Image 1 (cartoon, rainbow, N blue to C red):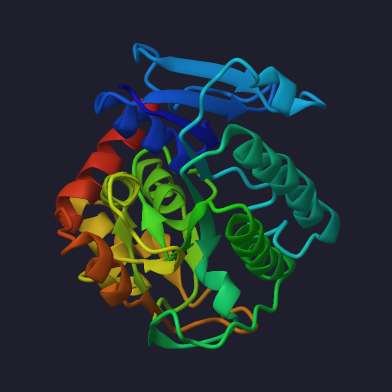
Image 2: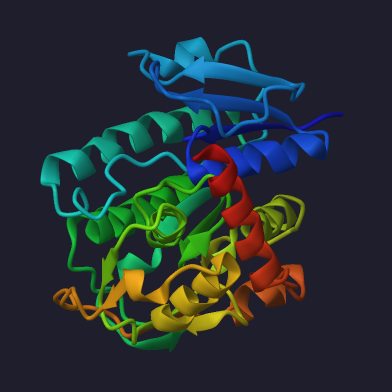
Length: 306
């Protein structure tokens, strides 16, 4: 029997990648989107994909006729850096989470997977595990942590398995052009200047297809409920090295990149990575694909769409 997965935020960078991958493995997908969302990231030829607008006041009734086995909650308002400290933008997410949890109870789903963030840990420098102190300083981080606590309490009270994934930096095709890697590639292709910090900070970048593969294994595993870091184990790279790698692939003018033109922001983490020991104990060893090969894929897609 084909299992059905409800994915919120299905048109976003992460949600769409999950739709594309999971559908290939014979899952039926119910995709939630806003009425005016652009669905360009999702392969239009996919079968067993149903679109439902999340703008309906009574979303539960709209889903009455569907069986739902799993929920992957990717949808989140206000993910851009400018909106992470906007109180109103972040509070919208709590009302949406309430409706998703009610649907989970009504449908008696087997498992909820929620996408959290390393921002829940607050300020730190290092490669940290799930026991690190939780002390978020942005409304985004605070509300992500509050969402985790709500998911845990609700699911424990209603006998639903829950998995909360704390995501560290991700990259891949069709990431928003506002983020570092796509905006850098676009500027260099167009021979435009790109202002950045000195680039001394090191981040663990995980490729989005590798992330989607991990989520698939979580769905198919008898994993314990709890919080799990999701991070690259092998791609801890300084932003300067990242820029030089992309510049080398494009054979562009490195003088277009203005290192040190921007100051480090307050509470700027200089080393950001997550230990994957806990998740690997549950689902087995995680293998990552080639960072350089994946960067080339991203460059190819951006170049094609400019």
